[in-house]
Length: 137
Image (cartoon, rainbow, N blue to C red; front, side, top):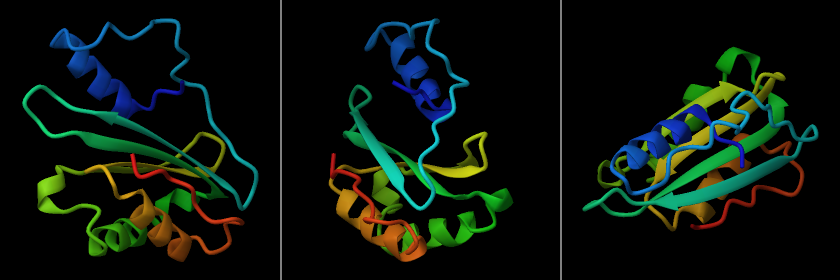
């Protein structure tokens, strides 16, 4: 399992509450995930803090150039305009270079929005062959 900085922070916070075991120090946090050009991979993990609703954490690796984050604001705005970052979702967001020049999106939102994430990302990245496949949860 590849742990991104946002997920590692979440897991560390949960571990400090004794909800989860401590992170494995042997996990290579600097491992880069690349995908073929014009393709994508999407993974989701669900979690809930004690007394809080469940959240879905998406990691989307996109085989398109990051180009210093030039498109990140537009992607964020499109996701927000489609309800992914509603006030009730306690959403978090990251758009970054995967270390190999490709784009990685990290999206935290309420469960059940995979279809919306897929639709918006397909509009923003029409060159991705086969569309996006983020599950709802």
